[in-house]
Figure: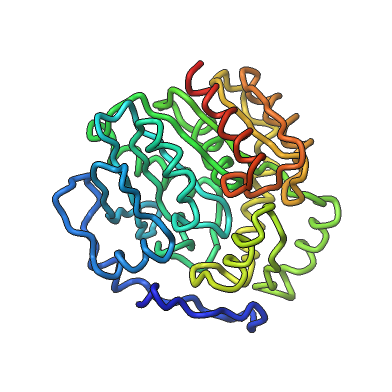
Length: 326
């Protein structure tokens, strides 16, 4: 596996395209235990260089695997010197750890350890590409990660979720009694996608005809270079969308509005330029289920908020800083 010479990817493949097999790499990684005396594998050195995941401000770093919901998952962590707590990050659909360097940097610069894992079917974790049967599996994976970290990483614990990662955190809060987080921050969280009234008909008809429709790459950030990298130079991006995932998202959309109210305080940061989620509906739905939530609107910001440009990024970071320091 060679990340330093990552191949260009054509995003007009057949729907049956297969992503590279990273099973051998996963098998070579240690079990996740947050011990810091293991050397990063050479393949991971290339990977981290390619995705700019080397942070000199980190006192230690590591990579490990864990098993949850039938998947072999890969988690990475960076430890701060004299850490003031730990930040757990959940990435969005189609995303992976490699494109969340801004989230890692955010945590480390505030004296927090940072932990992030590749969700099933994403990054270098196992699973059919970008597929899932139910969002409850995302929740289960996240809880197993937290249980491994329990007693090993200092509190207070905080959570940061982007898009489907935000849905994962909401799911975790709604379907469990364990509430380990002090501060929760959601960026453009997914409840309902944009254009759902017509998309649902495409889903209900297309699931019988097109098992893996072409994804298409929307411009979801003002960072043009980031968008180009995603579309043409990132070997861990999927060119297709999963109908199984769409079915799981439909179930989530139906379940969420009827869940019991949860009084956990959380921050929701949302951009008005977001064409990926139905943000007006989502903000209302989250406020209804989480009455203690605080909502911050960033004028013009697009969906990929963790990878937005200035001045949007500064507004987003300022909102999270105020929440952490409140």
